[in-house]
Every structure is written in structure tokens, then in C-alpha cells.
Image 1 (tube, rainbow, N blue to C red):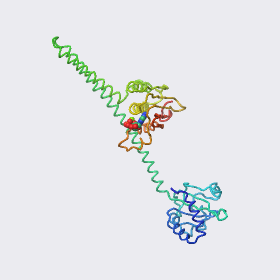
Image 2: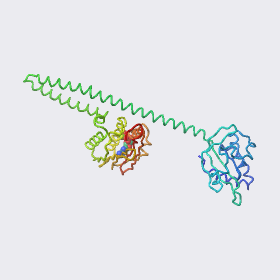
Image 3: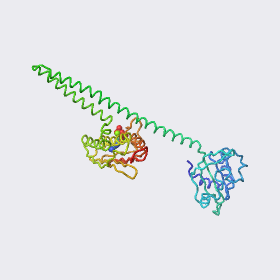
Image 4: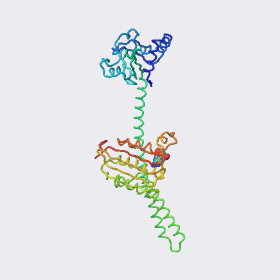
Length: 373
Ligand SMILES: Nc1ncnc2c1ncn2[C@@H]1O[C@H](COP(=O)(O)OP(=O)(O)O)[C@@H](O)[C@H]1O
Ligand SMILES: [Mg+2]
């Protein structure tokens, strides 16, 4: 980053004018600095260019000296530009992105700063311009943006695949294992009923086993439901959220209020599952980490979007620290929440402070991806 180099230069320049020993110093700096340095006079004629300028723009020094600055910047008439006028009236330009144009017409993105150069009487004599070639930085920024896009795409694909796999497993557990357990129980019951009357011990063992199978069946149902909430498909998003809240109140030490519009028709099934997962993670985190006495969920319509807010009065946490943690050491819950909100075309915010509870909000547009309003 260029930190007000123009100001520094302006002092150096003034100094060199009155101190010949420093002229050597100025020349050395001028030749060795990597940034381009151009001094123009009031009418934008180039009076001095350093070596870096000539090297970058592929001109000889004498091809630039005496020429108008518009030769090398895209802007055709610099003097008439509002920015130049403001600059001359003392407002420096700091770190503005502009293009320089080489002798062969190639455009080079530059980070440009400029300040007025004054004489002893304080009268503006010209402008000193310093600029840095930011081609590489731009390329790196673009590559970063591209890889971020790819990462978002991959993680959304991964979440979708995970959801599909969970649903498959859930059905398999429910239909296959659940069915087999049912058959086992019926068989055991018929054995028990066929036992001669004087086999009380065997009868008791059959009863025990039937009770055990009932327990396993209940567990299989619970695991299957946690994997893929069939309530969503059967009764819709609002009922599923009500069910989540009931389960939360039952299994945690907190109460939870729910203020929600009916929204079963607002989102297609994939959207409903994503919203359900975000709220599920919020409630799981409250139960697991918050030590809250009270939680609340608000879901309301705001213009063409639905607004969701999940809040608790628990111990809160340092959000920056949670995200700074080493990838291997931090949970995936919060990061996945962000990704899920993105998948819906919405955005998610987390407010939390140690001792002051946590509030998570996200909005989901109704119009996007064919969601019905
Ligand atoms: N509602 C909350 N109250 C207090 N701390 C929270 C809350 N939600 C998240 N946290 C903190 O943020 C961390 C990261 O959460 P998360 O990404 O869901 O991972 P995990 O739940 O697996 O630890 C948690 O370990 C916890 O310290
Ligand atoms: Mg979590």
C-alpha cells in the first residue's frame, strides 16, 4: 500500500531544491524506486519521470518529458477533469485505481496517488504523481474470487449430497430395519403365545425381549427422524419448526418462544430443508453451549423476503475467536449455517458477546430460484 508517498515526496522535492547535497540522494531514490514517479506542471505537461515509469511504459525519458500526461493515462483531458481541479485546490488523490497506457497501447492497472507541489510562496507549481503497478494484485484478487466461488459451489454441492444421503439412510433405517424389528417382535409374540402354560420363565424372557425390541425400534425411529425429518415432508416447514421447538424445550433447561408466520407454501422442499437445518443448528448450539434460560424464534415476512431470528440470553461467545480457530479445531455448525443461507440467496448475521447472549438472523428472498411468495 502507498502511504501518502506524495506528501513525503513533496517535502523531499522542496528540500532538494535548496540543498544540492540532497540532489544526489533524490536522483538515487528516483532511479531506484520501484513505483512510477512523475512530476507534471500546472498544465499537466510531464517535467520529470523516473526510471520505473520509462521501464513500465516502454518509453525513453525524452519521449515523455514535455508531453502531456494524457499520453499515458486513459483520461484524455486531465486538466479539465473535476478531479484534477480538486487536486489543484489542495486535495491530494490517494490510492485511486486508474490505468496507465504503454507506448504499445497496453493498459496497466495502477494504484495512483498525487499531491500538489508548491513553491516557497505557497503557489502551486505542479503535481507529483506516484503510482504502483497492481496487475499482479488484480490477478491474485481475481483468482481468489474465482476460487471462493468454486469453494461455495463445492460446499453447496456437498451439503446437497449429504442431505440426499441422509434421506436415503433415514428411509433405509425406517423401512428396512424398522420393518425387520417389527417382524422379529411379532414372531416373538407368537412364540410366547404358543408356549405351554408351565413355562413362566420363558414367557418372562420373551416379554423382556419384546420390551428390548420396542426400545431399539424407538431408537431407530429417532435416528431416522434426526437424519431426515419426515415431518417436513408430511406436515411442512412450520409444523417441523414447532416440533423442533417442542423437542428443544423438552430436552434442554431453557424455554423457547415462537412467533412465526405460516410459511409452508413459500419455499420448495429443498429450501425448507435448508431453513430447517439452520434453525436446528441454532437450537442445538443453544442447548449445547449457551446455558440460556430463554430462547426465542421470530419468523416474519418483510417485503419480498422472510426474516428469521433466533436469540438466546445465554453466555454468548467471541465470534471472531470462534472463526479464527484452526479449521481442525472448530465446529462446522456456524460455517455451514452461512453456507446454507447463501444457498438460499440470503445472508446470515451473528451477534454475540460474552455474557450477553447470541442472536442469529437471516433473510431468505421469496422471488429467487422460483420460490413462491
Ligand atoms: N448460542 C451460543 N451460545 C454460546 N456459544 C455458542 C453459541 N453458538 C455457538 N457458540 C460457540 O461457537 C462455537 C462454534 O459453534 P459451531 O460452529 O456450531 O460448532 P460446535 O457446535 O460443533 O462446537 C461453539 O463451540 C461455541 O463455543
Ligand atoms: Mg454446533
